[in-house]
Length: 259
Image 1: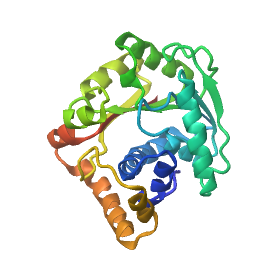
Image 2 (image 1 turned 120 degrees about the horizontal axis):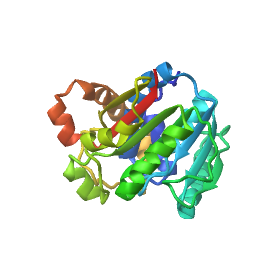
Image 3 (image 1 turned 135 degrees about the vertical axis):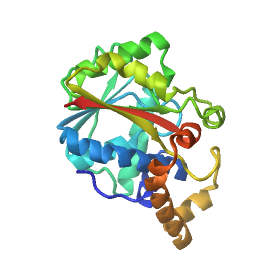
Image 4 (image 1 turned 120 degrees about the vertical axis):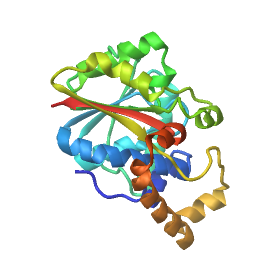
């Protein structure tokens, strides 16, 4: 259902957001778990991007998913600056020939927990780096609201069991057990919940690159080979012991859909 897109190609979206290869790797890792799950969940006609990242990027990868699936997409966030940042990043990506057919509906919310400004139903509600920035009580209401709005929900959040990542990134996180507990109220005999760890790039967090180095990464042969190798590494993450993934993964995720 999703196209096969390399990390090098996703790097174009990361650059449009002002990010680097770490973000492109993250986008690739998320696609690896979304692709088979979406195949089982069915092709969504309406997508809700339920909040934008707290700090890094603007979830252009989710707009790419919408473009590939031909879904109508709505983006909601309570921060006008985040919505403006996404619009600027989308314009930059479109100049490079990406996401040219995507025209999101932007909604400014008063409360991410309530999302009163959004009207369902949606076939897919998806968000990355959102849950951890909400107050604990608001997190529960947010997840319940997404479950009410959408027939399928996908959440990605920083891994609270990897302090090396959260400390350097400046983000708070949730452990996998905390995310599972947060999603427990939306489970039922007719709901399938899949959780796990992803995003273990083989380089330390916090690496910065010059504009010249970023430009070289889009055209250099060595960089292309290196990113090709990263793609194989990302696919191999799932065979690593759970204890290693718990300590080293940057992201924990929860995917919920009707059986």
